[in-house]
Image (cartoon, rainbow, N blue to C red; front, side):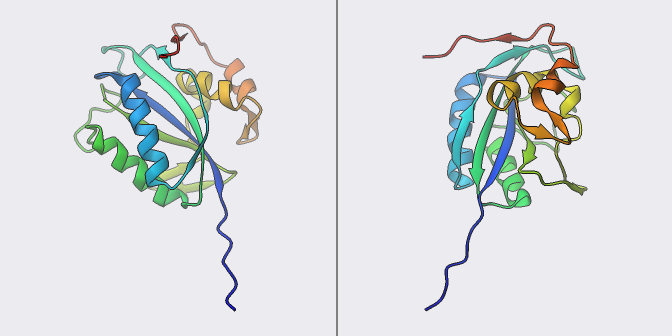
Length: 171
């Protein structure tokens, strides 16, 4: 009798953002697609937050949120899924302006405690602790998670949250 191979499930933190179209509706659909395509389980979802644009400031405010999922996909397979979901909602990374307007932006923030430096994927996300628009929703769902030796809530305490506002629940 063949023994079943154990498939290990990973805890993954993903940041969502966008400022074109009905972003909050897009988030709901995108999360369902992510979980379906990644054969993942949604563990937690933050509130939505309106945030000032970052990098290229001459554009509409963004809406940002974070989710935690469990999946048995490896980091590169999950990255492929996230990019496919972005494309489904109108994002073409090759044609997009860096830090410009977008319908949907999905960033893998952390994949368990994996450290990875590849041309197409760095884990944990290298600019996490510079970005209040990620840290605010992330601290809502995973305040005690330690990433790169820093507790999320402590990382949040080190950045300005000016202009970030929690949006009311949609229903």
